[in-house]
Image 1 (tube, helix red, strand yellow):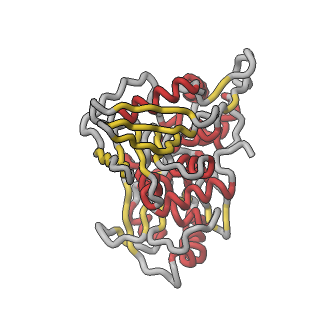
Image 2 (tube, helix red, strand yellow; image 1 turned 45 degrees about the vertical axis):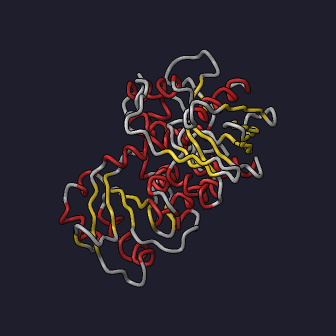
Image 3 (tube, one colour; image 1 turned 135 degrees about the vertical axis):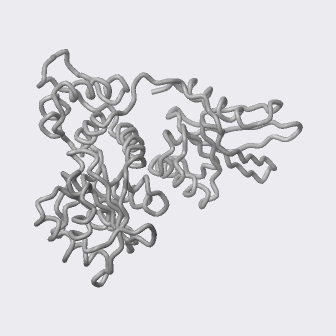
Length: 350
């Protein structure tokens, strides 16, 4: 946890990066929690004053937590706001600025800042990159699998070496810690901050999903998409012997209803079915199209991803994977992600 002085310096540095060099920025903590700050921006003879708040990584959950914790916050600041978080803030008339150089601030005092993303940002090289095995290990840990080599290996299907390496990498990233000095496959770590690990995992899972090949299909619904899913698609896929799971908005409706309409059903299927488009068409009662699709299919990203609950006869992806996928879709789906997290404690130790 950064000290209060470090947070003040961080906010001041972020603000000055988007302001004219002649502007003077004063930042005063409002409390000791390091979340609310009184800011004064001096430009010429005018002082622009506003209440700023720190929203962590910048996910929708972070900005909602900030607004609840700091009523009346006028400008939110974060590491890097997601697109859905920016929309959420803008809709509520709250300005925002993040450490990537993006900013939208409009104050009645006349302070107006609008900055687009930098085309080329310097990003310090990191020696630790999220690998598929790290994503699977984080997925398991966030789903309450004890973070020992033995337990995670059994859950994810990865080798002992890959599991041990991934756990060590997550420890180096500051997500896990080893409370005792014990070693060996049964020695345990613990999650330091569940929300931080959930955010780190979600970013990695969203990036992983963006690189996956997808197949788009169209079919006619019997009633609506969810009715067809329950009565036709799920029984057919389950009887086929293939591994599969529904994710996205359709999964969120089964786990924690928030949105009322599903325009596209998102599925994960195993590699064999993904490699057999004609068989996939038959199983889904659909045809592959270039546009106008109502079904989108990707290969299961990890063995853990399919290990969610069966709800109303439908195999649902692991809730933490559904959460990340909804965030990646953005818009109202990101709102459904936060509803899902709150309703069923996604990624928490509860």
